[in-house]
Amino acid sequence: MSISKKHFLAEAAVVSLALVEIGATRTLGPAWVLPWAVVAALALPFRNRFPQAVLAASMPALASSYLWLPAIFPLYALARGGASRARVWIWAGSVGLVMAFPWPHSLPTAWSWEQAILHALAAALLVIAPVGLGSVTAAHRELTDKACELVRSRERERTLSAIGAVIAERERIARDMHDSLAYHLSLIVLKLPADDPVRQHAVEALGEVRRTVGALETPGLAELPALVEAVGPHASLSYLGTTSRARCPLPVQQAAYRVAQEALANACRHAPLAAVRVVVDQGPDVLALTVHSAGPPTDPLPGIAPGGHGLAGLRRRVSDLHGTLHAGPAPGGGFRVRAVLPYSYAEPFLG
Image (tube, rainbow, N blue to C red; front, side):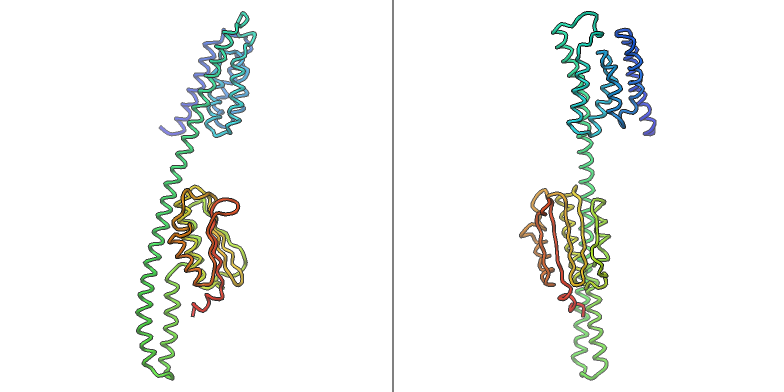
């Protein structure tokens, strides 16, 4: 059975129950209650979208003291829909008050205080039941959503770990290539006389090998959007400054990528439900990368907290470029990692 058909049958059952209640009690109260009760019953299919309006429409029927379903269903929908607790209880109090009030037309004789107390208790129970059930349903849905988000965050963390493993393997292959080729080219350079043109070609080839292998080691700014996208929709990337990415030296790009990768991995691991923002500020002489996780970590971050191996490795990498790295609680809340990398010291690495 399709979801739309199930929904239609459920709504038809709710309206039918309310109409049955109206039909069974149609002779117990004044005639003016009946049309209001029918209007309230027919409005029940709209209770999920407009619970407060449906509740307001049910108030005249509530004054009969015996028509409860037209108010109980929208009250449950209001509590289940995630409305603020204060709003839910204001409506619940209003419904309970209208239910419990000893209206002159509700009984042929005046109410005794015993009858009033019993009626008030019954009204309170009839109000607390839908509010409690709706609140439990809303809490269950919220917990389910958080559990699903945690599962997705773990999947993103595994994706980032896989990306890191691929990069590490690529760096190992690049280092092996560099060591082997550099060794043989260096022997050629040493064995040839200084004025031999082949020697000059070998020197140029050695420099080209260093640049090419350096490009293979770690992705740069061009690969940063894919890294942020792998984290999920709650992660965003923005750029400041007008300096071209090509102007940024490759070692600076690689260091920035590593900082972003480590910070995003820790955000997925320790604050999976928090929004994460990555900001790249490219100036004419320096690049600043900031990763801000809006939520506080659930426990000390092994890769970010002082003394963590991830942080130590990032500090060494940034320090090699004469840059600075700061990691800690952000002034406005959450956790922030910020790296500032100058271009000047990185440029000699390119040659």
